Each structure stands twice: as C-alpha cells, then as structure tokens.
Length: 56
Image (tube, rainbow, N blue to C red; front, side, top):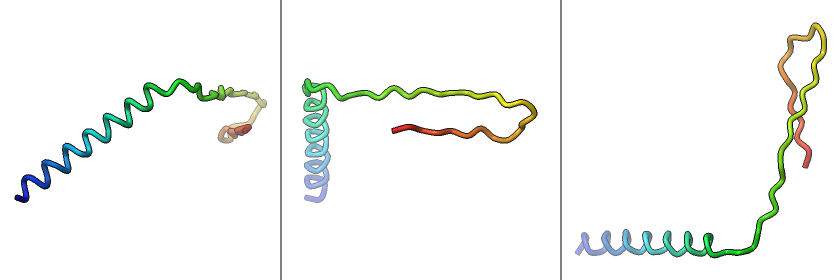
C-alpha cells in the first residue's frame, strides 16, 4: 500500500511538471527583455575594487 501511494505521488509530480512545461512553451506572449550593459571607466593610479552600478 505504501509503494502505491509513493508511486502515485511520483506520477502526479511528473504529470504536473510536464503540464507546467507545456504551458510555458505554448505561451506566445513575449516577455520584454532588458539588456544589461557594462561601462568601464579607467582612473589612473587607482587599485581599488571595481564599482558596479545597475540601472533599472
């Protein structure tokens, strides 16, 4: 009986995962992508760590 419950739970999770994957694949709405750009400034005689600024 215990093996039947575990097997059913595994099958349920596999089916749920497959349905979620199919939903993601069939979703035709395009998500807006935001390209990330990096800017490098060189300052003479400075050996500190780089500072990363992210614009949103």
